[in-house]
Length: 179
Image (cartoon, rainbow, N blue to C red; front, side, top):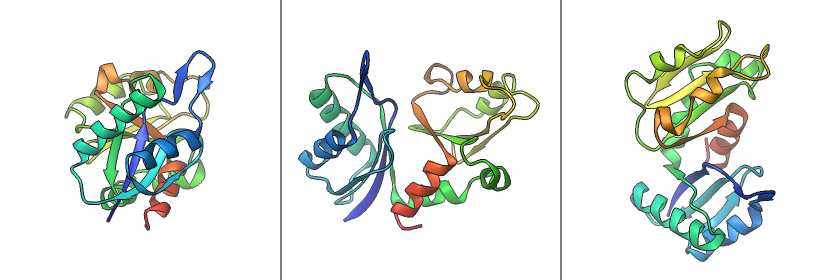
């Protein structure tokens, strides 16, 4: 059995209707996934199954989600080893220790374009940082600005399919997969 992390892009099912993690867990178990666990109410799953291609797991989860909840949601899957590598590759350890909620990674389905960091830098305030590590985009958001232009710039339209998680969540998921 292999351990995987699955990240949902959105847990909003419709106006005023959010996904309940127990329902997400049940959906995953109905697919035959084992030892299914969730982390916080933001669409994070950890599960075990026989070694399977990542793209196949993503397709199965997305199809099951749409069938179960009536809405398509992009789901990004990483194997446990890849997740541990992602967490260990955090390029902002100092900022993460100070304010884990201000450091985030946009976990990409396909590696971000080579010029993605340069494009995002145009939206970054002086106290914000952007780096690409392994095709994922790491960002330190400003504590001074309640609404960052950089946050809006890290969209599907600009970067491709992916979803963001803050350092606190990344670290806790790494712990769940045995980091």
